[in-house]
Length: 129
Image (cartoon, rainbow, N blue to C red; front, side):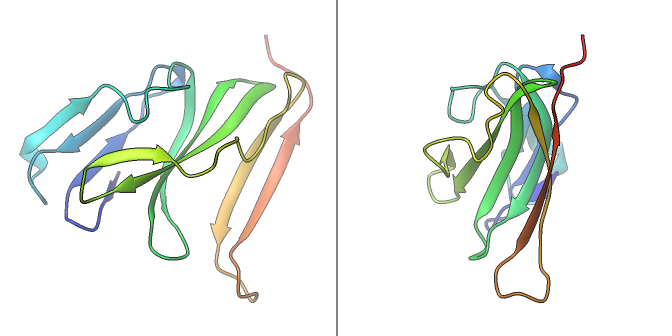
């Protein structure tokens, strides 16, 4: 759960290789006005796992999730436009792609001693049936 720059509350969860489950409030800061949103971009949203809202370096409102299953997933990043209340892909291609053989489990980004945020990836080489 996270709040965008206009005060709308976004909620995503209860997904493990499941279709996107996403809600947004209809009014800023009003938890009684949640409405189900069926899609963000409409692509690669049928096998979502590990959803998280994060902030970019320039305070962009970003949604990250894995599309796919254990050992066969890609990492997707969407960025939100608070003026139009729409999502678009942050990257043209997934940040990580195990090519059907492995999966990246991301940690971060986090602020550290370097000017740029740091990210860590742990790769799992085999799938779990």
